[in-house]
View (cartoon, rainbow, N blue to C red):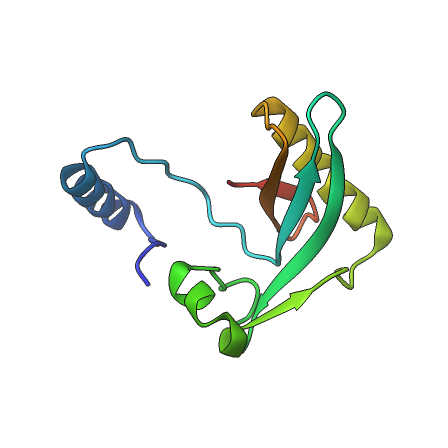
Length: 128
């Protein structure tokens, strides 16, 4: 998998390749080392959280895992879905709040999901 780069020259090379290949803007984000969650949200004027699910990739530490298309295709062998996630209730509330704010900021409608990662600071960060 080459969606992570470790230094500036590699970032420049990968970005150049993406721009030339796909001819569209590129988003560069910091990779957050930590567990991944997906949050279901429903509603328009007053949306609410349907639930939170933690995604674990078998045999890969959370700090390195990427829930890629390749992993999703083989989910039965490679993924464990934890719903509800076995986390502290205060962290769960933070995850729900960040997901809901993201949904509202993006003017989400009807039903959607927001994906988050939680790093060492235990501050959930929305990235999709």
